[in-house]
Image 1: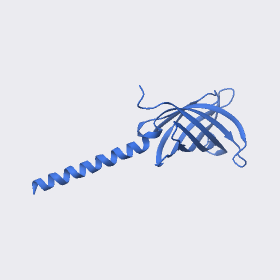
Image 2: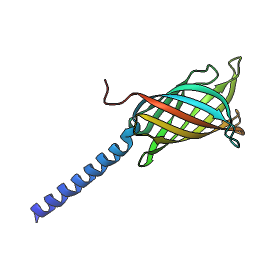
Image 3: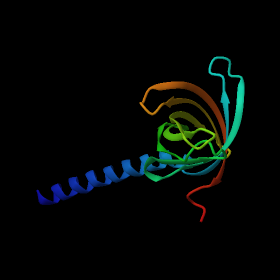
Image 4: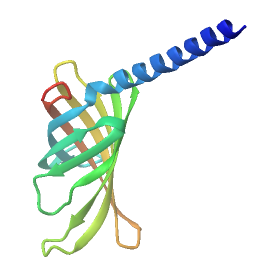
Amino acid sequence: MKNLLRICTMLALGLAASQTMLQAQEGSGLLGVWNVSVTVVNCQSGAPIRTVHSLQMFGLNGIFTETANTALRGISEGVWSNQGGQTYVALYWFYRYNPDGSFASLAKATNTVMLGDNGQFEATGLIQDFNASGELISVGCVTQTASRLVSPAQP
């Protein structure tokens, strides 16, 4: 009876470990640092408004960070997850600043990322800006194209 219990325990632990490894592998395709071209677009027409560039890092345990090439916004902090296959979602926040450096808004971004097989991804997203009182003051849309700079396998 004790041997049967030991065998069942080992099988259960092995199954749990296999599930954990499978989940880690499913999300590993996006891990790393990406060079991203972000185009702000008109949400209704899709017409481009402006383009900025950013570095985005998709880290272990769903950690997301980003920095952009404009002084009018801060570093992004957030989370990401695999939605199945090559589709991911990133949710993150950053501060926007007025030209004089004062607070303009807190932006919440939600991106849907489609990972390609060629070390690139494309994404679409929605950005919501909130004033100091937490009231929604604007909504914008973005499209993104990215190429991988560093993957976890690289030193």
